[in-house]
Each structure stands twice: as structure tokens, then as C-alpha cells.
Length: 112
Length: 114
Image (cartoon, chains in turn purple, orange):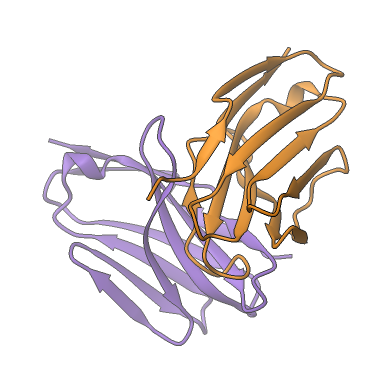
């Protein structure tokens, strides 16, 4: 089955700096890659997603890049703010949509 | 629109008992999926229902089961509870037909097995 590895497990940055979280996947049939943000004690919320026919997608301070050949995708957050502090999960799903595998999560701490 | 609603928020059960969790999806969403979240294993997919049919299942034992009703509400049942079943159980709904579309999560049910 699919295996998704996420790094780093914890990331501490200064407010205003950029943060990058990387995920690798094993199943070449995976073609949908969402990112979820989970603040402490709250539900996960989708922040951005990308499909395999696109190499990059941006939404304000957040961007995701996908390298299908290397089977990895990354989340980029620019100009980080304290409210970006949360656990971020990457995930991968295949075209059939019959499995969704999450990475282990990254705890991002933005220090003011 | 109301979000995904899960009840109850907290449950404490004893080993060997069974438990039923409930999930009401966003109106119009026909796909409901369930996830187990633990500190050690992270977020793991349990199963997905669409139009009252289980379409997909993760790698969990048969003690974990579910169903979906005609109004898309879903229930998850865990029988013969084990200590390791203690977790936050999240359900999510989506407009898509499968797991390759955005998920809208509920707040979860925190199950503690003693």
C-alpha cells in the first residue's frame, strides 16, 4: 500500500521567516495531495491541495509544489505568523480515490 | 451551512464493551469517511461510505464497522474494545465520490478505554 513520510516532525521558525514541510510518497498511482492544518484541540482543515497534472499551486502565503518523478511534494509558508502555529498533515490519494494515506504530521511553532 | 457534527464529544468505556459514534455530514455531502487519530500512529483511514454503501476500507480489524443511512448520516461501531482503541475518532464529509477530494472534518469523538 501507499506510504507517506513527512519531515520534519517539528519545526520552529521566527515570525516572518519561511517554513517548508516535505512529504514523499511511494505509490506512483497517487495523484491527489492535500494538506491539512490542525490547531490544538481543533479539527483538521484543508489549507491547500494539488493534483498531479499541476506542478505548483499558490494561495496567498501558502504554496505547494509537486515533483511526480521524485514522488515528493512540499508545503511552503512565507511570512509566517503566530497563528500559523499548528500541526500540518500531508496526504496522498490515488485516482480511484479508494485510499487516503496521511503523513505523520509536522508541528510548526512560530515564535513572535 | 452547518459543519460536520459528531456526537458524543467524549466517551469513556471499559475494555470488552462496544461503542457507537455518530456523524452528521454537511448538507448535500454524500461521502462520509472515518479516521482514527492517535499520538503514536497519527491519522489513519478507517472506512468511507457513499450512498449507504461502504466503498473503501483501511487496515483495521473487523471489530471496527460502520454504516450510512439514507440521509447520509453515518455511525461507527467498535466492538470488544481494547485499551489501544483509545483515540480521537474523526469523521469527514465531502462532495466527491471517493477520497480524492477535499474533506470537511468534524470535531471528533475522544474515546477513552479503561
